[in-house]
Amino acid sequence: MSQLASALRHLAPRRLGWLQRLAATLGPGLVVMLADTDAGSVLTAAQSGAQWGYRLLLLQFLIIPLLFMVQELTVRLALSSGKGYGELVLQRFGRGWARLSTAALILSCFGALLTEMSGLSGVAQLYGMPVWQSVAVLALLIFLMVASGSYRQVERMAMLLGVAELAFLWMAWHAWPQWSHIRQQLLQLPLQDHAYLYLLAANLGSSVMPWTVFYQQSALIDKGLSLADLRAARIDTLLGAVLCQLITAAVLIAAASVFAGHGAVLLDTVPELANAFGQALGPLAGRLLFALALSGGALVATIVVCLSAAWALGELGGRHHALAEHPRAAPWFYAAFALLLLLAAAVVAISPSLVRLSIATGVLNAVLLPLVLVFLYRLARSELPAGLRLQGPYAVLVAALFILAGGLGLFAGLAGALTA
Image (cartoon, rainbow, N blue to C red; front, side, top):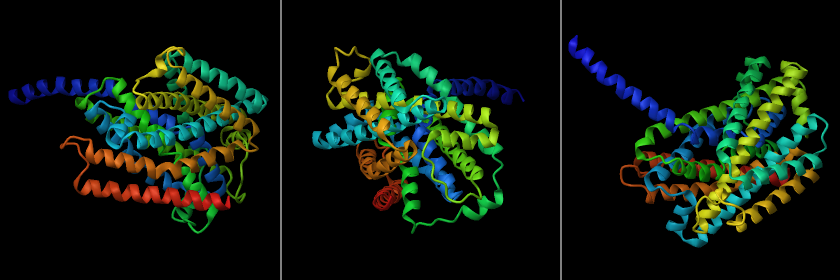
């Protein structure tokens, strides 16, 4: 008994120390996954449920292992090399490929800004504010937020709003889904239908995006984590991936339940979605929770996208963390970012359908997916130390999944877009 008691006394501080390390490490994985459940993901999942019922629900859960594999490789690369994704691409493949990779990231970031501004301006529509006015205010506020460099305070506020995304789980439950319908439609995959393929690509592209890879790798480095934090960082990433897809699945379930029996429904505006979700929880509570949850995800994603663009451009130019510098110290970044914001605001202001614009952005990410996966896989095979290098049966599994996901995203995106 005395030996057992002694062992427990030694074990307790060790376990407490590991839990403290886990608590200190948590953040980058959860933040990037809360951002991943952004306005584009929500609008895409809602349209999927409204148009196809539960036929795209299985995809949300199949994405979890892909999402974890992608982000877990960025964790390995960050903690073992101490370098960002863009810096590693530059070092391993040269400036030409680094420019191509960064161009894909900026294109993805521009698409993300479109979806976040679409979502936030759609929320403003709920309260009678015209889209052109809301995008002008949003563009100004986002630029001032970026120029201020005060990301610690802004990120804390965004995380608090990001918690509102959990409201989608509550809404899905109170939409009273018909489990018999879920069982009936779960394995119905009309892959011959181009409209279905288009939304399949949008769901895939709104889950695995270039800026999530850039962000998490740089955020881990910026936080000062090391290989000693690898296990905790993996848990952080796994929790984030599961939470991300549970929230997305909840949105799809709620939309499918609300529109069950009404046939395929095409949604064009955020108020249409908010009113539909209001049927599940009541007009006031439903609209308010939907607005808070959508805004929370969009705000977190805006911060992550801005940081990703700054880190990537800084790494390509041999500078780091230009986002925290005064605009006069990094005019190249702020001028480019202001131009991106103006272009995004103009596109959102003239778009006839904010929902379809967000879905199209997801499809764009799906088309870019093969490029991201190829670079990530090659880096994991060549830049990691022997103990962490991607090799053996797991490397074969990752390669197979990356080929399947990248090929499916490219085929579904192009095939769906040609007939959309």
